[in-house]
Amino acid sequence: MAYNILHVDDEKEIIKLLKMYLKSEEINHFEAYNGREALTILAEKEIDLLIVDIMMPEIDGFQLIRQVRKTKNLPILVISARITASDRIFGLEIGADDYLTKPFDPNEAIARVKALLRRYHQLGLSATAKNESLQVGQLRLDVPACTAYVEGCPISLTAVEFRVLKLLMEQPGRVFTKEQIYEYGWQDPLAGDNNVRVMMSKLRDKIGNQRIKTIRGLGYRLEVAHGET
Image 1 (cartoon, one colour):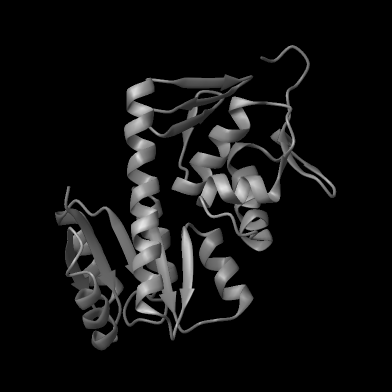
Image 2 (cartoon, rainbow, N blue to C red):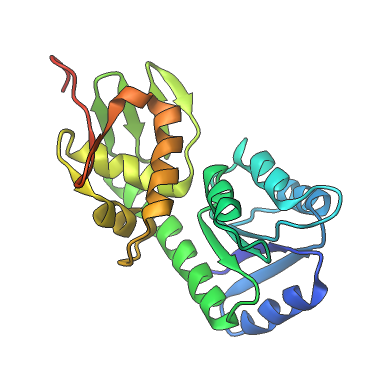
């Protein structure tokens, strides 16, 4: 299966570099040099993964991510020279799935691209096969459709948020460590406390702050109210 990747960066040399490294992969490479061009391509093509720079003309990367997340659940990898922790956290908070800082190793970038594609599409295939739906109280997860509902109203989730919510809903009341959540959500065994905290904060905003409880020193669990199943 050939995947379609859209790489958005106003530095043409960066795009050329990754395009060269992607030649050996089964990937169709589309390119844009600002956020406005990217939105046009996203409207015309079926894109499987978005690579986005932050500092771009017309529409910057943060604005682009916000626009994309209104309608699409595709994986988003940020590759940016903005290296502060606040920039990284903000990017993850508004919907990016991974963040890589410039200068970067092209081989690492390709590895992250392949991992995001594998996780995203394997999740979709397994979910369709199981035809599974999870429900905890007024919170329901339609796995085949990758959609969550709170009191009957659909909410938008990123790929990582979807995986973590599915993990919590499969065993409500169980405490999962930050390491378990990070490994399941990002499918990476390395601990990522900041990533987990940011993602959990966003997930709480979407499903209701009271539904996810922090167990200090241990991790997180999905709360089950009295009488809920």
